[in-house]
Every structure is written in structure tokens, then in C-alpha cells.
Length: 475
Image 1: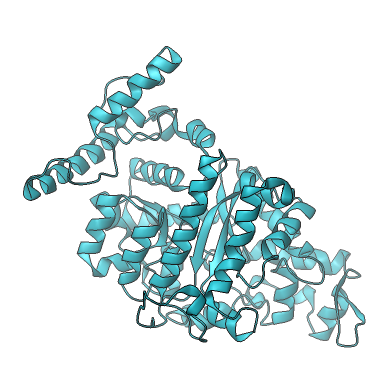
Image 2 (image 1 turned 90 degrees about the vertical axis):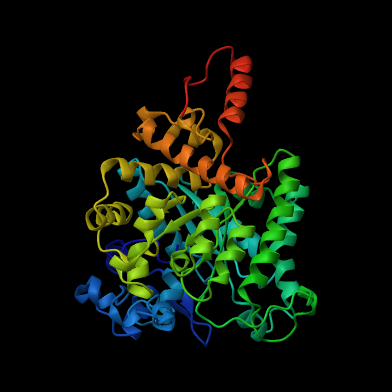
């Protein structure tokens, strides 16, 4: 969420604070003397009257291409790390007040748009056991709840940084810091009601992020997390396995006790080894980016068969790793992969006040998508999201979880039944072909129910409610 607002929103926020709240105490100096916002601006010779979106120096340009180090530096407002820590972090002298107020301007824009909903990220590093409590306290203190937003907690793959700082002695300790607080509050919600409220009502899942182009160490599956004590970062697959295993185990417990569960949707396949795509497919509910599938048709085919969701951000990709017209998104979509469009760091990669509309409109024009295509992509986005059953039911209809036209409410999705039926029939034809080659019917675990299985589900619902829940007839 540190880049979830637009550059204009950030600029207006800084100007408003400088003009009307320059006496806010924002930090203490080395002599433990308080520092006001106005004093901080004067210290760095920042004149807000001369500030523009360009002088903020946060937006992407050609210098970022394949340079993740420069990309990270763009979070420093006006190249200033202290200003970044004040405005774009929840853990600072002000208790993240400015960060919260800035995020609320973004939420206000969502509310004005009415139909814009998001899953913004906020980071937990695994530095210490009370990190979750601090996050929940920040959320509660500043009233960060919004019906237009669910939170994905983003875990940076930064064990090497945390280990070097002396915060943890092993990768196992980092995992303990990440998951022990979640187990404690899942077992006994009254032990931390504020954290329980955040997890249950406002958090939809986990993300995992860092520069995938970094070369992985060889994967040593026999090295346990507690024994990973060196300064090197574990390989991508090692991270995926242990995060996925812990999230899955936690989900099983929470579901058994009627609690909410969490999606795992890591950044995966933006750059680096194509093997990352295999790790992501095996342990996650969906991934972000996935553009490296273009290098390996076999992996792309596996993503088709499993229908693991892929949220692609072409405008981000074009600045960092792949020119826009070389992006494989239109091929993925036409072949029937479960793909959607997503924003990524609007502060850096978007230029309008409606980043998601910007993403959709450019894709529509550049790749000549029809209105039906765009509606199908939007429908995929809802299905991939971590919003709850009742919300998805409201947006897509009561049988949204069915893959055939039985699950498609055309009045809500604006996707014709014939398009949904085509995707459904082609998928099962492909699965039937594979099973015929193997010579064993039922051998393949399908990502979509068969027509007979869907009919059985509908019949059960009919008996429960006494009438057809939506419609009959399917394709």
C-alpha cells in the first residue's frame, strides 16, 4: 500500500499538510528534540509551493527497466528516505498516522467510484513476534476499515536482511514470528481481540514479494528452517513451500472451527527462473504476474489444467521487465487460462486518478478486446479475489462457484452464456482427451466440476431452498 495511492493524491496530501499542519510533531532528532513537519521540510530545503508530480520523483521511467534497485529507490519521496518513512510507513514516531490518512484518500476515491474494490498489500516481515499486534493496533487506532478494500499481508522474501540486522537467528525463527501469533489468536480469539477482528473481517490472504531475478541458491530440501542459520536468502521454492504449508495448516484449523481462511497469492513469474511458476502453482490459490509462462508452454498448459488464477499487471511489466505489446496476456486469455488484469503500484506506474480503469482501457485498445472480453476478465477478477461468499454472490449471482453457464448470471456479469459454455466445454474436452491418452477415466483431477456434478449440486440446492436458486439448463 506504500504505492497504492496515485502521485496526485500524494502531492495534494503533502501540500495540505505543509500548509495547514506544519506544526505536527513528526519525529525526534539525535538529541531527542521534537521535529515538526515544517522543520523537516526546511531541513531538506523542500518548498511545497514548487512541488509537482514530476519533482516528487516517484513515477516510473525507462531507467527502471530490469533495474529493481532503482525501482525500490522510487519509494523515497523527492529522493528522501526520512520523508518516505514518515509518510509511507505504519511504524514510525507518529504511529503511522500520516500513512493512514493518505490511504484513506485512496479509499475515499474508491467510494466515489462506487464499483471499485481492491485488495491492497501491507507488509509483515517476521522480524519479531509482536509485528502482527502492531499492525492490528495501527489498523484499529486509525479506523482503516473500508468495504471497498480487503488486505493482503505481504511477506517480503527478505530473510537475509532480517538475519543481517540480528532480529532473527534462523529462517525457522522468522517463520515462528510470522505464524505463532496467528495460531495463538486462532486458538483463542479473546487473547487479542483487535488482531482477531483484523484477521477475520478485513484480511483476505497473503502475498510474498521480492526481486525474482535474483539468482536462487540450490534447493536443499533436507535443510530444515531452524537449521537455515546462514546469511543467504533461501531459494524461491523453499519460501513457497514453507509459507504455503503453514498457511494451509492454519486454514484447515480455522475452517474446522468456522473461522475465515486466507488465500495465498504470491508474486510469481514476473522475472527469474521459470521454475518459480511450478512452485507457485503447487502451493498457491493464485499468483500475481506470471508473464514468464511465455517461455515454457508446458508450464502454461499446467496453469490451464489447474485453472490457478493469474493476475497480470501489464503497465507495471512494461516498465520493469517486458514491453507492453510483448506481454503474453492476450494469448493467455484467448487460450482459456484463468487470467485477470490488476494494478501494481499506482504511485509509480499509473498516471490517472482511476488506475484500474487505466489498466483496462489501455488493454482494451492495444489488444482490441471486445466488451464481452473485458466483462469476462472482470468476472475472473471477482472469482480470483479474496472477497467472501456473500459479496461474490451479490456481484455474480448465487451459483457463481459453478463453471458452466449454470453459474453465470448474465444480468450481473454481462458475459453471454455461450462464452462461459465455450470455456467450460473446451476445458472438459481437453481433460477427456488426456484421460483417453492415459486410458484411465477419472484419472485427472479437474479444476471444474463436470456437468453431471454441477447438476447434482443444483439439485441439492433446489431441495434446500425449495426452488431453483438461479436457472436451469447448462452448457
